[in-house]
Length: 183
Image 1 (spheres, rainbow, N blue to C red):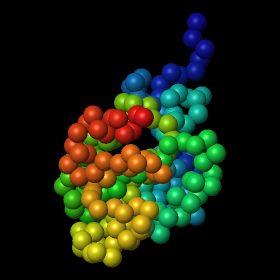
Image 2: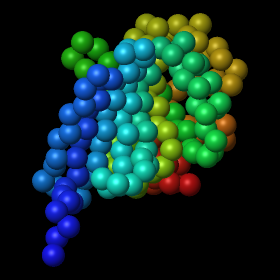
Image 3: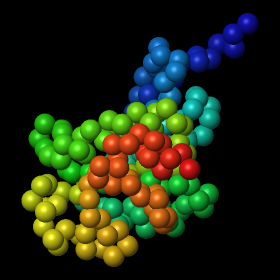
């Protein structure tokens, strides 16, 4: 006999003061919890868990500026006691239509999102916008100037504090993305 609990995945939206849960009829989709923190209005988190009762397996965040990136990395490094993988995905900032000015960023983002759903990755996944086309082309772009990041190409996928990095046209190779995300 059924326990009365739904096996359907759900989406929970938390704005800090209220929470909404939306169940999905698609049993193969993971649960998704989207939280918007009032004190952090510049980025959002999406926590994906395997089931209604399991711990989150992936926390996806979108970072809009270099300053936010540095702050969030510091927070994660200090709080990451489980040594969860922190994967960074650098792409061109979207325009008013919600698409990046950088065509390769748009294409690779679809492939990365597909693999993230299929692989059940644990840890943190930060999508980081590097700026408008003009900001990216500026030689003083902070992502290019930061010696630890030394970002030269977009899109770039990188596991923080490791040598695992793919960029440019290699990001179109699904096997390369798979190996970077899965290891």
